[in-house]
Length: 108
Image (cartoon, rainbow, N blue to C red; front, side):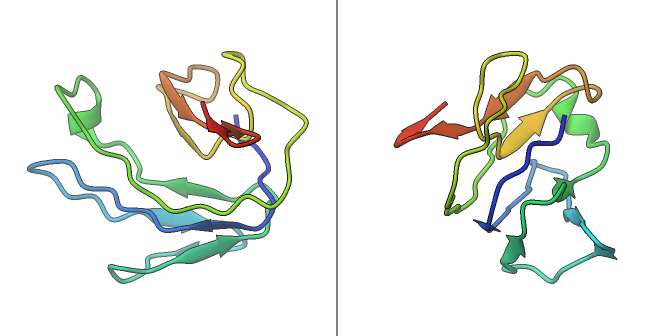
């Protein structure tokens, strides 16, 4: 489930030890950026996809790190009640195993 987020500035680091995955940005086109790259979304169905990372199927631990600046709220929420989703990991579009979002000044 892709959530719309207006003017989201995202610095995304996707590293799973020992496998390092470079993210694929999908918006108007597919782009493979160099390391230490920041990407700005317009909030119109933009996503970051790291593809199928084998080590995330049953991880003991992993890290998700990004900077964001949300300038407006999204009126929708996920089936788990998470608002303004910025990160989601699931086995398919209907199964969200982990979600990170925000509501007001609070992270969810």
